[in-house]
Length: 104
Image (cartoon, rainbow, N blue to C red; front, side):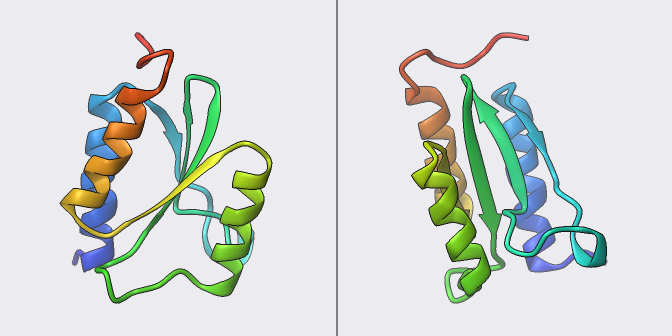
């Protein structure tokens, strides 16, 4: 049974594959590290973290906010996605990257 958040993750994954972006889903739960975004990706050499939420009312946890701040302080980029528009914001970032999308 799919949840609202899993549907967002599926839509995000589909878009990332369409844009030929390498991405990974870090291990969650007891064997994972708390606060890591749901998806990590590389866009033209830049680390990108993407946290998925079921809708606009769901907010990242304090650990997630802290982790995303550390990623951005290190030169990465982070997004929180919860609908079609926020997923399109990620696509815009991928396409507007100065070096353009990668070709596989």
